[in-house]
Amino acid sequence: MSITVFIDGAAGTTGLEIAERLAGRDGIELLILDDERRKDAGARRDAFHAADFAVLCLPDDAAREAVALAEGAKVRIIDASTAHRVADGWTYGFPEVVGHDTVAHAHRVSNPGCYSTGFIALIAPLVKAGLLPADWPYTCNAVSGYSGGGKAMITRFEQDSDIAWRGYALNLGHKHVPEMQARCGLSVPPLFTPAVIPAHRGMVVEVPLPLSAMKGTGSPEAMREWLTNFYASSPVVHMGAEPDGELLLRKSREPSDRLELHVFASKDASQVRLVAVLDNLGKGASGAAVQSLNLMAGLPETAGLRL
Image 1 (tube, rainbow, N blue to C red):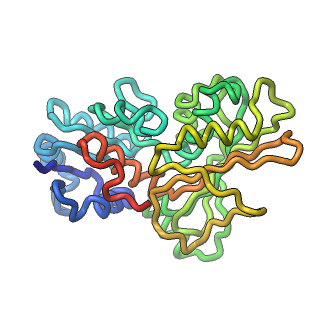
Image 2: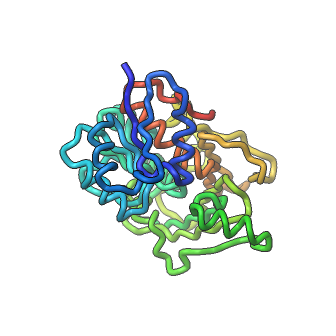
Image 3: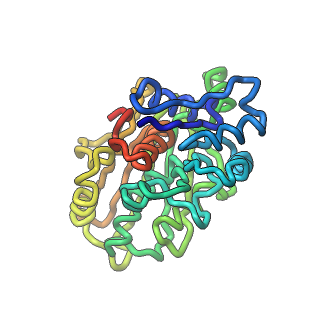
């Protein structure tokens, strides 16, 4: 028995990578609209009503419009935009954190943000376990490849080789902050400082912890052990080997749907650096959507993923 999948916004970076992960797979039929019809509301409505699953790779407002177009259809939706990540009635598509069965049985799934994936993977399990406080004002520093910014950002970086670093969201209003706070159960929104670097893909997300100034925290060893056990059964999320003095994000990085976590500590255990390394187009976007789709369709969780 095959399933039909409609990617609304298939011409964008995320949509193209999702299609690559689904193309040629037995039991999956992609419903594709040509260039003349892909922005036609009627054609899109028909596609939603014909498909078993739909993945929205659209700006936020367009994603909300797409959900309206799909009203009354049997289609189960995965939204890769920010529009529904903290919305009622939507399941957060991070099965390692919210539960695989929860995602598998969901009708509406919101794909996590790329930066949020790294932050939540590190912080949510530790807060839930009581190894980190929920009321601490966490700081999150992160860099990403420019492909996460879409076609305009890709063009800008590829045409201007003089850009070495691009800081943004300097007014502290980044769209990922609400889901980072909500999904970790934090009473204070994290102070988030994202930046873009001249690499096509790849991402490093870091949360520094001054343990000597924090009350009620676990030791670095306890944090590392808890995260190791928490993700022990995951084929996607892994604790990384502890490197000697450095982590490298290479421009030649191959596409990957893995998420790698690290716990680094000072010798006296007074300071910790929690670090997540991932592909912003993999577990940070397209890979996460395909993983959720697999679970929702009753297919092997890692089918089509690059691990």
